[in-house]
Image (cartoon, rainbow, N blue to C red; front, side):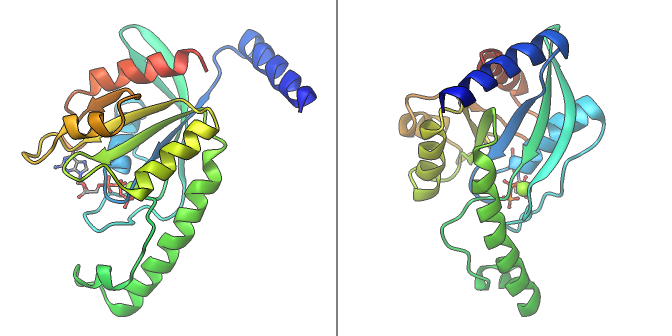
Length: 213
Ligand SMILES: Nc1nc2c(ncn2[C@@H]2O[C@H](COP(=O)(O)OP(=O)(O)OP(=O)(O)O)[C@@H](O)[C@H]2O)c(=O)[nH]1
Ligand SMILES: [Mg+2]
């Protein structure tokens, strides 16, 4: 245990001394349909010209972990390099019948449910590997639920820095305040990933959180 801590410590010092800037692993986590991929796409598009994955109004669009390496984010003259990691939405219950209302065939719905379940397992497995995590929540939804509490609890236990994003603030029902009230000990940034609203404050918070990693 102590040896491992020592090794990690020296590895960090060496990599920062000799390899230039370290690439931080920035994970996007949260419930399905909150806008994780929309946000990750916007960042990737702005700084690399490419997107990370597909977006859909049907939940569980992302069903396996997606990566984009060496994304250099520039903000107010400062630069940081990230490995962006978009993860499948975490849910406690995945029912294929929920997909039928999107006019999906039964066979496709069942397959989507199966893949989505594997995706949840994969998301949780990857948590340990993150340097910084952005939890993306849909600000029109009630933030008090099992999924959000479980993700945050896991990150706290692993001492991984967390930023909470209240997404979809372009919608009238959105409430940043409700999310702030639910998670008072965290930095909450209200954005619209779809319309690119308030991303400056988002980058500011990501940089602040990443500086000490
Ligand atoms: N109005 C509004 N809609 C948004 C915003 N961000 C994302 N959406 C929509 O929300 C839906 C889900 O977006 P995704 O980016 O696929 O969400 P996700 O969290 O990656 O979802 P999963 O991959 O299923 O976990 C899509 O229809 C998006 O267009 C936003 O800021 N405002
Ligand atoms: Mg997604």
